[in-house]
Length: 349
Image 1 (cartoon, rainbow, N blue to C red):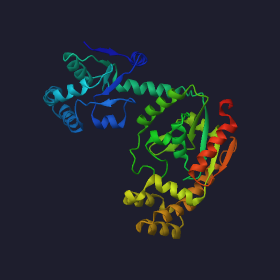
Image 2: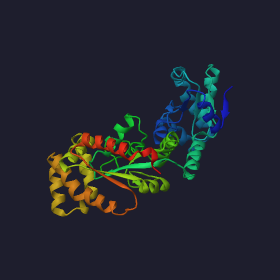
Image 3: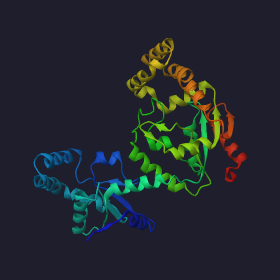
Image 4: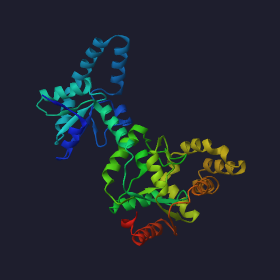
């Protein structure tokens, strides 16, 4: 018989070796928020869940259960097959630790596949995440990559991470680049998903002396950084990158590839059009219509993003700053590495 285990006990099991979390909720629920690293083997797909939910509300619990059993029984062979591919100990969960995870665990037990079930479901995990963030504890100092839009901050973070430096990429876990165009081509996180991924990163890096981040505003797309992390970012060492505008245009175009989603960029531009002087806005609009993305990007940088950055950068004069003048992205990365060596961040306090 399967066992119901509280979250702390399952975390303890994870420390003994590889462990797989299986979210048996619908794909839509899974994509909105789950336990980081989980896989999705749903009892019901999105349409089936909606149908059963409607029956439950409009007809009654028993009819909904019967329909659920009818749907699930047809997919049992495939359901069991997916679980047989998992070679580690496993834990199943749904929203509250209710019927879906109980059904999944029971069926697996009958087929000789051992699993545990998360008591209280993902709701318990969400409560734990909120509790951990409310502690407002993260000892490492922040080293903050700052600078105008297009100075390659995100790419430099990726390169640092690939070399083993401790990095938190807030934009990556937010699924958003942090600009008005930042959601294009991405799958933006909601706050629950962001918090879950964030706490995973904070725990992973809590014993590091320092962590590299990007100089974000508190709001990133649909989500917000916890205030204590934003405050910590504000007092961290600021490495401010300066690149020629033509290089910044190249970096922006390589990242966003606006030619792949031209209509999305036009729609996003309309949201900020009124904040620009009319002649400049018309020029940008014309460039976007003609597919002249380099010219449009340069005007956006010079007339929209740069003034906004200049305003925000004057708000905090208390943190230590290091300016880096570079010719291109590769040059900027090398100078960041040189700066790291020079300031010896292990001794930062």
